[in-house]
Length: 401
Image 1 (tube, rainbow, N blue to C red):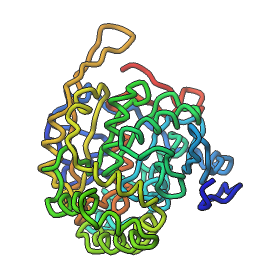
Image 2 (tube, helix red, strand yellow):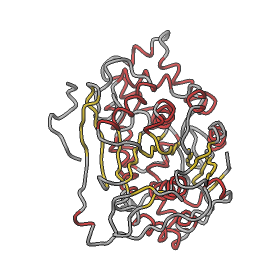
Image 3 (tube, one colour):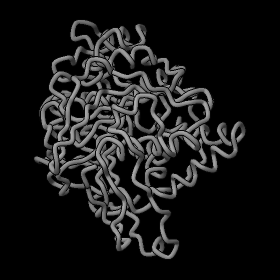
Image 4 (tube, rainbow, N blue to C red):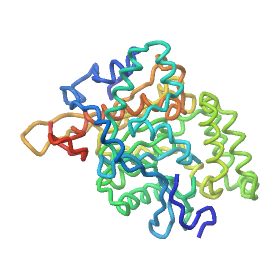
């Protein structure tokens, strides 16, 4: 058994840009300029939760489960009977670095850099954003999977590849009793999410992708070349990194020199460094070599709605590259079970604008409230999800529009 586990631990193709008025005003009603892609109409009304109900809500934290012989760590929060939404973090990430986004999905207010910037510029928009966050309480079953070899999860027994990571995520859903989930994939986690939707379409309701690399030219050139150089089997650096204690220091140093890393707040930076120190070195090297490879064949097989999000100042993958990636996803027509009504859904690139301050590849922890509201509103639009029935039962249900 991997000794980083306590034996019984259980603790903690449309160009759509968010208007500069901010999500407090626009994301609240989500007035998209090309409404036909969203099926028309407004989002189902989400009533604020009853304050007396919050005290009885179970607070779920870190858990461990065995999946095909690999012990995996994950965080679970929110309503155990809620709409499943699974977050898959980026390269060498740990769930402790995602806590701000998880808080926001749970209806809490992390008071992040992005929200503070919005409050200073447009206080009314920021207040509206807070009201929208309150509507997320009791709505989602929130899962944050630490991929094998990252965070506190044991590595795979075989060589780690992103295809195997995707297969593992599908098995993880089955083991914890999730039939189909909304998947939010960040950076490398976005690649895994695409492969999950491609290889296991029955496991995915919709994809939200942030900072995803779909081909070598999507990535910052220096970062891509450095990754290929460091992981080449023909160069000595790969074998030097396998010396105990060397890789965490190298990865931590590289993280600190990254422009997007420097946009994060200090606690988020600390979490990134923690992830570098926890990563299983062989897993880190084998997956790093795959990041940025062409995944066009996987994209062609995606059958669910796709939304692409990123900070407008992202350096690892620029917004222009994100738009090009969005155009690769096949256009889908979805027919509801009741009646002949159909709607067409494309991949929708979505930028977080300067109204929320400078946001980059670390937007998940610098503007988590904004992303949580956008994910919620887009899910409502694309999937027709509702929060409560007429009896105020917090258990979600899916209804045709």
